[in-house]
Image 1 (cartoon, rainbow, N blue to C red):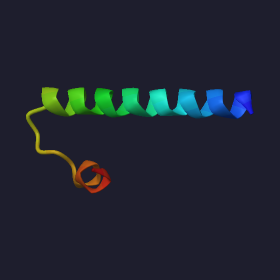
Image 2: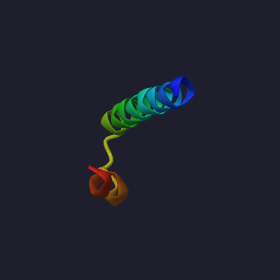
Image 3: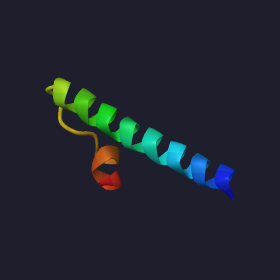
Length: 41
């Protein structure tokens, strides 16, 4: 049970970090946001 909880926690943290990194990259680029990113939101 602990392993499952830790794995979920790690996946959640990685997911949040990935989304934050993607937002930072999108902010740095002056190009319009891709359709894929809009669909995910």
